[in-house]
Length: 210
Image (cartoon, rainbow, N blue to C red):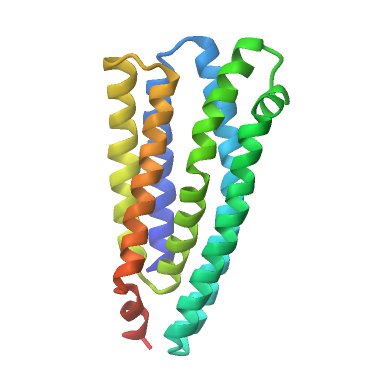
């Protein structure tokens, strides 16, 4: 089940980026350039969460395959603590070094200034983004990929582009509106995946197959 679900997630992620980019493309050239740079920086930040997520998937799957639920929970909690610490350091780098990071991509003062402000949004979502990867990785390792796919479908295809369109075109928040929508997407997704983990239902998906 995991591989088809992962391919489906990649597919809807591509569609989301297109829909989301269409909203941002209606803004001025400086805003669009700033957005693309900040999205590139966010993509780099993904690697940390993804690395922890892959590790959690493997460890959780192995533990539940051996019917060691207690060890699986311990691995997820320990990985979450470590991932949270790393993500907070990354968030701090965005807060303190935002202008420097933007300066690596452009020398346009307006873009650097706006980008440094947008990176504050990115800093705020780092802990949620990293924990989301870790807990969704644990759910996948437990064979509970369907729930994750549904959550991603709701947040990526509906919440983010819908809220971005509302804030950008209706309330005229500009690029900040687009990133408020992105932050709301990440926050809601993290909460829903964390609630699934807290429910403990993921434990029995894998155990039923063993």
